Image (cartoon, rainbow, N blue to C red; front, side):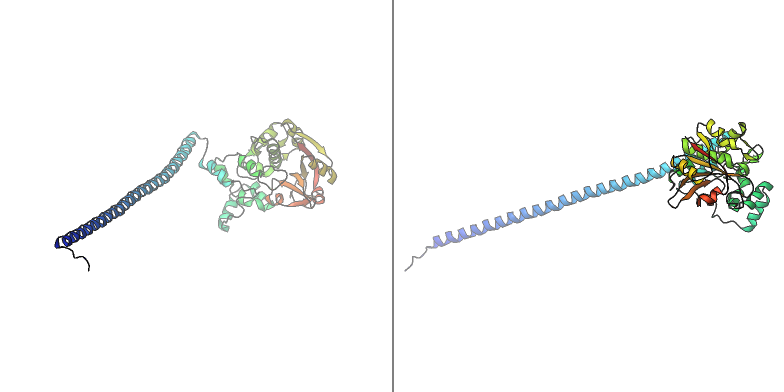
Amino acid sequence: MGRRLTEEQRKKILQKRKQNRLVTIKIIGIFVLILLVFIGGRIIISKIFSNDNAIDTNKEIVNESNKESNKESDKEIKKDTVKELVKDTQSEGDISVDVLNNGDDNAKTGKIENKYANEKISKADLDKKIASLPDILKRKIELYPESETTVIRYQEAKEKNISKDISIDFENSKLFDRKVKLPYLNQWDERWGYEKVDDQYIAISGCGPTSLSMVYSGLTGDISKNPYEMAKFAFENGWYDKQGGKYELFNSGAQKLGLKSKEIKSNEDSIKKNLDDGNVIVALVVPNGYNDFSQTGGHYIILTDYNEENKLVIYDVNSYNNTNKTWSFDRVLAQTKVLYSISK
């Protein structure tokens, strides 16, 4: 038979069990408390970092906003500065808004093109503008219709103080898809076409000085001799008058500017040899039944290269269209009176 527990022993066992349960409850309570503290800490830390990120984000937004604000302020300052410059210089009589805008009109495109060619004008306005032109300029349009879009701006050009600077043309020439990159200058350009030397417009008789201006600036990089300055230089030295440029302009005139110049034979072999040597050639051309370059008397064009198809690449100061074409040797030589080979 088993041994029976006394009443006192049973009480001790029950009391011990009760103590064990209390210990277990305490342990569980402590564990739960630790767990709650841990979870609470995570939540608090998370909120702190969240607030920090929000602060950083707000700072970034504020910084970006300040940057944009500063940019706008800079723009306004620049605008105001330009306005002040224009106001100051206009009061001195040195410049006009048109001078500042001229650079935009002649932006670098790498192309030789008339910036007014595609402008639309009503027939009534066109007729009115042509009617107001001097007779010699009306005749210019009749003989060379390509010049119309610029020549009709004669009155505006006379009233404005337009810069004759050719730096944009010089920089634009560097982008030309041509072996020889001369700045393209047109004799009826509004910057100088309606200035007179020996009582005649450069637009009418200035092909010689304009051609030499192109050659000189292209070979030397000196852009101080724009067509108007070159026309005055030529006139003062007796190589240019109201009838146009004389032969000596591309011989004695070129040499006085520090260039080398010589007359060469008017044949294909001579042209190729001089072009292959890196020279440019100025050709005095006459209509001779073709009228490609001139409708009346003599005219100067510049030969700079020939392509794989044996066609000449030229610059014609009286025609964007002619300049953007290539020409057979026979066609050019049939209209050529004299050739000058020019180099640095």
